Length: 423
Image 1 (cartoon, rainbow, N blue to C red):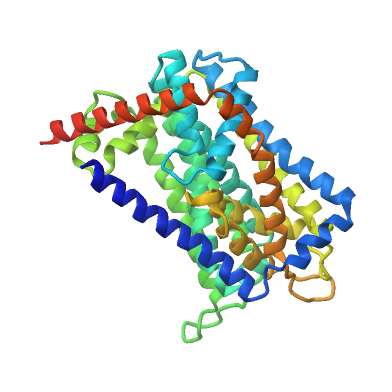
Image 2: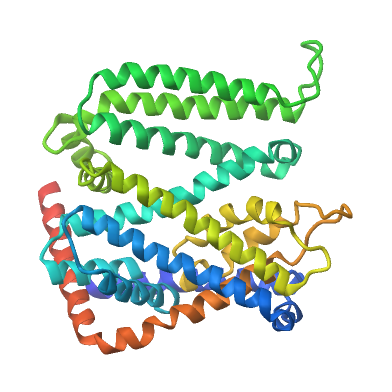
């Protein structure tokens, strides 16, 4: 069994590496990524330095956010220890090609150090969700601000529907489930129902205010913009309706209740879903911490976008992007960059950022090229900053390896017990 697992892991790793190599090969072969752009950044040391600072500060903010989430569950490692583990996690995420990512390393070490399992896993899960949620929120805001241009670009139609759908579900489900359901406040259904109806109407009025080609008669062809307006409205309304349903179903998802047992035992990946919900339950009495952590997440992504802007000035492209252009292209690129491939999304984030930035126009009306070079410059310095974790890891290597082995053994035992119970 172990050999089969090893072969499977190797195949998955090779596929991931091929994806990275393919993405960079495409960027270089098409001239979207050039060495001259990267070399030119050293001619503007001021902007380069500001970009490096802009890439380093978000790292530290992520460590602070994780520290707050740990404290909320009575896990006080000390900020210095959290920073140490944070840098080790960054190093693993960037350089290690095996199955042990930075989050797993942190979880394994803290579990071994504190003897706590559920709270530690919950803190890591919620930390990752808050980080991804912040990117989605900013991405939705960016597309909303540029909605005229987005709807006029057919290649973005599927993306904008997906972003707004996820955004609606994310925001409203999070608020309703955490603020009302976890405390079983029945009056919350009425309050949130009113808010959701008002939200659907407000969003419809917002979209309805956009100037589209009018449909004068049923026999005329409906424009893509009009169809997209309808799809977006339905997507957001569907997200809000889903959120409203959460008010009624979440109490049954709590441990031991009927729906929790059904999902865990009968639904594919149901146990993973319930693990996520249990992670949220750990924070039911720490809503303030979640709010502060979300604000930190938004500020973190904003700082990363600022770093990209300074790096774009260091690269000194012929058609320089404005901060609004960066704000439009970066959030979705960072979401793509979160994909679990070697190098922390290497090649994927660059490709998405480059393609979205090319949709923007300079003052001269020309497409903005060179987005891949900007993103690679950010990645290079992020990787170099991640090397801070190497000496820290080497200093405590034996403890970390022991923690990893204990964690893997515990996960194997839990999986075996789950398979036995299913049988």
